[in-house]
Image 1: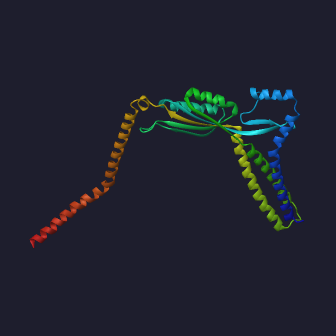
Image 2: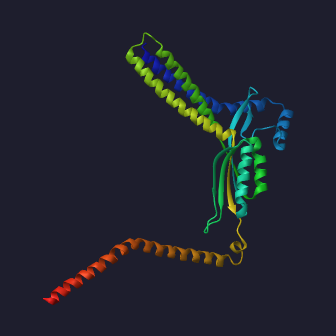
Image 3: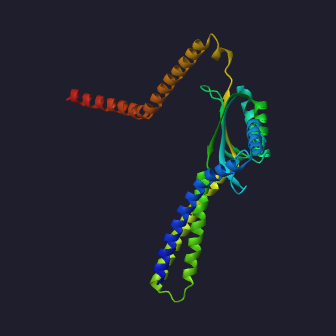
Length: 301
């Protein structure tokens, strides 16, 4: 059997093993749980139901454990996300935003983005912050945020990433084994040069796939090991903006905006034609003098 036949045989076995592992992991938990529940005595089942109803047991914020037949644990990789809208006075928003960022850095958060937009004549200040917080520090971080601003909206959601994590880890395992087999083939001194070139090409492709899936696994780790928190800062509206006179205040604001835009258009027009005026006026004066001289000569004749 030459080296190419070995290569194809290893690739086929790796693919079959990957499919088998994925199917086994997907179907393993339900039968095992059924056997455990059937074999458990009635008092144990009652205690299990009581623990579920009272919230007994300790669980991670991002990982949940489930029992199986071998009394081992199966990790559930959960991505948790928080989205908040907070309100503060316009002149205090900068201080609240800076305090939130400083608090996040103190808790060893990962700051993904931090944007602050200053107040303009046409819009109030605003800010946004996107961070990843360790699960044990989420409540502390949100409590500190509530001290600096008023929370108007707080939305929470979660996403189960267990299947994606299991698939990524299985692919990493199989690709690593396949890569190691290819490296071992390269050490075969009896192999032909053409076969070694094919093995080297397959090794490069396998390493590229391995690097890609390892990057995906790192992203999944960031999503499941840390909690995503997105915060939008808004400015509290004044009395004229939220009360009886709000339509009048809005109309005056729009009128001033339109007037300033018109003035800006006039200024732009004069600035545009100014070079032509500076050039054309002397030319017109010169042309008039020349025409006067020509007309005087015609009349003298």
